[in-house]
Length: 281
Image (tube, rainbow, N blue to C red; front, side, top):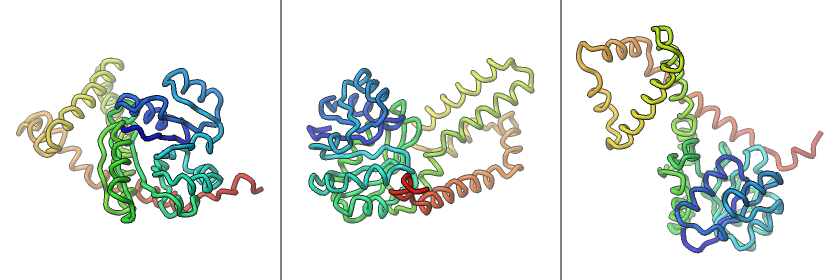
């Protein structure tokens, strides 16, 4: 990154992943400030990263050109709404990694005074190996798009989508996707046990296969059908297994699973949190 100051609101897993990634990519610690209400989390940030953390979100935003909203979606409104005057004066780029929180809500809570980009990273970002779907309204400048991309590249790859609705698909595919692969590896290990493998051997075989296959897919120009064909010899063991999966309508099952995840993402957006909800009976 350049010499622009970056403020993060929230220092959970994704916030910490971004801080670590930004530092690795060359952002100096003194250019990163964090708004975090938990004292233990603030102490850990200072100890682990050498960044400034404060319970005062307005203080964390001071001088920031980029603000990353990395809090839980249900508290996003309560965090942003009191900061609207500060954001209006400083006019930073706001990058939201809050799942299911739409641009229209973010703009309302900030009184429409800041440019907003939505980001949907996934859990491998914790290792710097994530991928983030990005969406920006048509009013966002090329400079702000480039800045958002640069921030999120600190934790992995980025892919821009052309509509906000597509973020729901990103959430279903890559946001939730690691769980699908973990589930498949778990089921493979359990099946290996049933075939006579010891539990630890089955788990290691499944996990290493998941890891190695991911590396191959990542380095093969995303030609997944070709990779599968290269493993699937005619009349061989892989073909026998794939035939069973296809006969069980694996394609349809995966399609329905992602559709359910995307639908839930839309539902969560419709359940837009009320900034005053915590004060209501």
